Image (cartoon, rainbow, N blue to C red; front, top):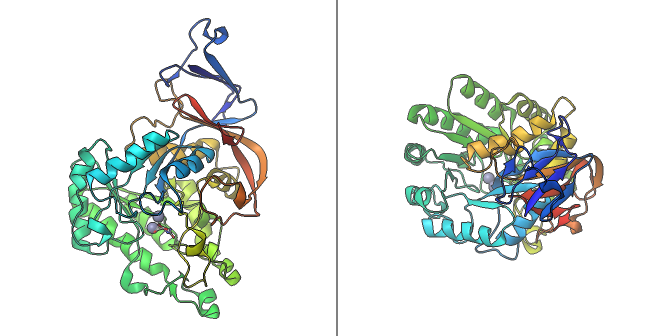
Length: 429
Ligand SMILES: NC(=O)N[C@@H](CC(=O)O)C(=O)O
Ligand SMILES: [Zn+2]
Ligand SMILES: [Zn+2]
């Protein structure tokens, strides 16, 4: 069945009807008479902003291994509710996604769920152990078409291994997404940002430099190999400085920032609430300010959620013992709209949450411009809505939601995936 989306403002520009044909593609004009014929569904989007379907470069879906925290299906639901039509599923599952079979399995589970494209990220090293390269080529050539490789959760800290990985993925246009954290500069017990607040509270911390030295090393390795590196969850002003310099040299580097690093700060540590325990840690206000500026000026290419669901019994512990990570898929768009000022346009939102992530991940079928010929992935947002987040409203299996009780501006109302309405009026269709 074809679909007509009526009255939406395209990326904040003119209002225009959008047509998706019965093959699920956007078409310029509705075929004559089709608007009135049966078999054409109408989605009223009056007053809403239409964005190309959002793409998340960094999602933890926990299946296989921790289906009590999230599954491919429940994570896909959370993604759809958040306006996403594609997510890249991180490899730190049990077992790790380090073979073509494992990647295909995740991809198939995504197809079965049928709510978003679930694109597996392949591990860089076997078992995330940081020593031997995983089956990068086989994963790339498999049906799952893996292009993004990451040991996320751990840093590929051995420079020789990182160099080999960069050389290897170059052959098929792949990219290594690095969790930048030099382990020798961040003790095993580190649980927050090393600074004034951690000192006062007596919590062991990571210094920003542990991230920055790896970012600096990796951009030089990218230059040396002529390959492509992506910096996951950039969190410090120093990392931004390095990325800005590297881009000016023509080095093929891209970077993402999470919604939580754009708003939440180290001060939240004083609550000792483990909901705010995340890796990389929340940083001081000065870093947050620089991250926002870098997102606006294009130094940071994309917003990625790092949606990291955790079961209650892994999160509800003393701060030092609790698991790292927070939810993000359902609230990302609203957080971005809330933290970025009016000079950050809807076209900018589309760029950092759809176009650039799709380009970085080399996703076919996520053009990110709402042009005729692209697949009918559309996110419809109410720009005037104000929502108070309630963690129990979530379709995720987990409740580690750092936005609980906060009021955010704008809200995803409908999500259309390949011409099919997956979310209507904020709820799964
Ligand atoms: N972000 C986190 O704090 N945790 C992630 C791992 C990661 O992204 O490094 C997780 O898998 O839970
Ligand atoms: Zn990480
Ligand atoms: Zn992560």
